[in-house]
Image (cartoon, rainbow, N blue to C red; front, side, top):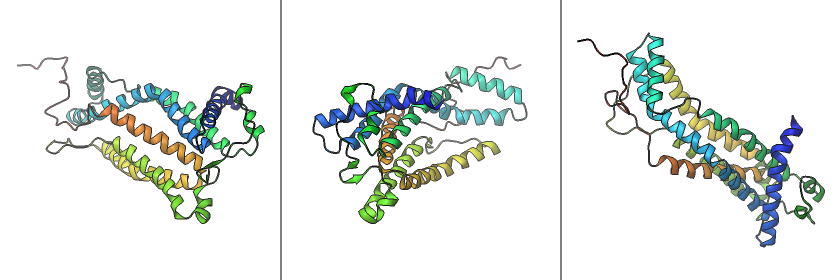
Length: 278
């Protein structure tokens, strides 16, 4: 399984990185490996753009109908079959497929993990042979070992290791890593508009809201802590990956901001299958 994953994901991604590095060297760009990592991350993000777009659109639709789902649960409380049928009708009339947001994530994971695995290894290579064993064609082979520094900062060392030699300035990287993750997570939470009426939430909704709020702060702190103990090269990857995601998320959601609709004014009126008796 490991060999298949290497052949399908790690080695192709490594060759793209080496090709970008060789191009940057040809153009006499300083710190070509560091910039190569950033450009490789952008390339992967562009390739995954349609999948991530589908995931974001699905997430946005689910946010928009969340207040209506709570209203349905409150209206038909105790009638599980009615709640299920009305929920499916709500999804259908709003063009929502609850499983649509899962498939893009499943497809993305091997690519993202492959990118992470490549960057984890290349910042640790110590010889030309380590790099050249990954290349497909001779034209990509290195004639000398690439510089593992990005403007003087060793990409293979962690901020924790560099704290004594570089100083507290190196803590900017873990901070930026956590801050960018916080911004992206914050954008996923729909903002409430003044004057809107919220519906009563059940215990499950309250738990999910509390969990989402806690994750908004805990997850970025965890990412920042991990980046403090991970090689600097991975921090460049994570920051670039997250910033690109923030831009994509903003572009795809700015035209349809999330709202909390009052129960009396649904996004789309539900069509009842049965008429009210006079």
